[in-house]
Length: 385
Figure 1 (cartoon, one colour):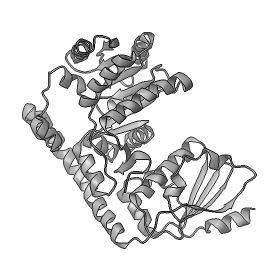
Figure 2 (tube, helix red, strand yellow):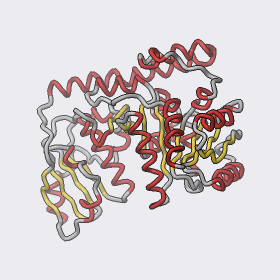
Figure 3 (cartoon, helix red, strand yellow):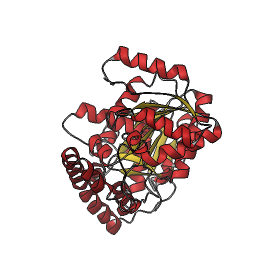
Figure 4 (cartoon, one colour):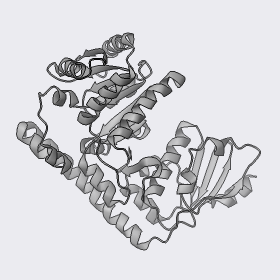
């Protein structure tokens, strides 16, 4: 089973199914799209820390923001083998991990070939400047728009506006933000409307790796998913607790999801197929025309009732949800939210609702799922008409 639209859901976050070449292709295409629509785009390189931070309960207002940012990001790569392994266990395998430390050098190469410019923001101990020099030496034709490593305070609006003005005046095509997760994602989201950059990429500690200030594990450890062990040996006092807590939390969330998913595979007799239209107001087809391609088809045999700015789904024939169906529901909910469309889901049984909780997407769909004792979708629409 391949991920729907090249994505799979990793504990509430859609992650794109890409290899390195495809990731670079997508980013370069975003630069071309910016010339047309002037929309700033975000690329996130998500690892275990990202997923855990997006699901922490200590500060729900921050969690909701990080979840929303990652769910609405234009591209999310799997920067960590645990994400790839979990995707395989769920039956929606990601091709490979695409780390920030590997992505930036490849992106610099392509940018040099296509005459695009890069700005480096953040990093520690002069790593941004060192990285810029290294990338320039490797690719003499590369345009380094600039680099800076200010002490970023998210709430210091004046200083951030000054920093953004410094970036904008250089007109870079790509902004590499090395502030660490979740600070780099929060910074972009808070000030994205002021940025005039086609693509911003959160790259964490990538500058330190490229500059040689932090050494990377041998390739065999990277491919084996145990690079974290090597990193702990370099800074045990700081990293032991971080990795122990992160991996423990990730496994605690992942294990019951794996069990539930296996249960679905054993018990489910749902077959994927084209969604049927139960009642469609053909006098105004705007709602259906604006839907992302293929999402309804991914939901299989359900009732679909649509009219302008209203989409109602009847799940009375569904016994459970496959991973691709969970992703399709997520994308539908995000589409409805971003397009001010009223999406309502009727007759979803308790087992499917439980699956949404284990996938960590129940928070997103809660406002769309009608109470179990509400009127079935087709009856409600008949009464309304």
